[in-house]
Image (tube, rainbow, N blue to C red; front, side, top):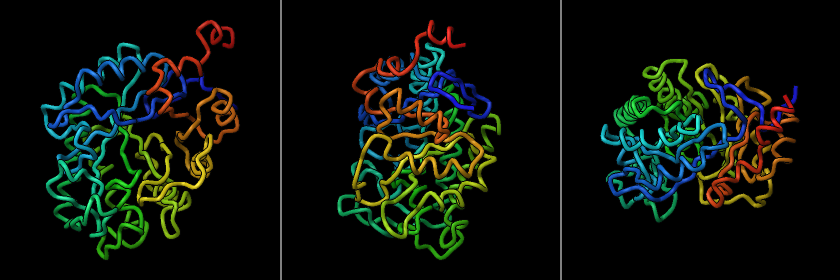
Length: 333
């Protein structure tokens, strides 16, 4: 069976009215204490009208894991109510909302981070500087911060969680052999490098239950020999598949390396390669800006959903141009 953007889809227990997802993109508008402001309420509420799901920008689970000095966080109970106002604005359009939970690790902002940490003492670049290799106690502390963030996500009335395991941030750092050279239970084999992710996921599941949607965003390639590949990701994700509800496939970010050729749908081959081996929905992202391309991807079953980023920043109604209006959808049905 083939699908189009207009068709509904289930992410775990949650039904999306269509397969177009607002991708998480930073607004750089948070306060110094990582609180969202009125801009966030208006921004997300304005863009929720037509998409099937809104994924909030990267939201820090720890004050030491913030990606930028003006990002937002969920590391205190005081963050819950401001975040709930964003969820309410999205829900006003009968659209579900997810929070993307993140920790920057060695790519946390030097401007707001007191202690730069990573799986191994390997710097991303001179700007960020040399991180401290996490102790097992430090790892356990961060896992607990993810657990507490999950509790707050539910209190803020979001409909699901996306675990940020992409773009060179902490979970990605544990997963890639280029940034993880540990010799303990958190390094070495694929299984050991995935241990931190597994324990984060199970800590979240322990609080939200199995029926609350939890997805993951991954960087399918590190664009460097010896780094992660779609094949390696399959080995990592297959044992965790029963605990996840979708896989959101991006690329890069672990190293200061850019892809050589960025074209329409340039990340799609990686999403398709992962989709062949999993039984949960795969979300494709990366310059998929036209209805014809999006539908061709869905019809050929290369992915199950399409995430849209930059065009929605420039035009809050861009999603409407990709979807059929109600009369067309009724005639099609």
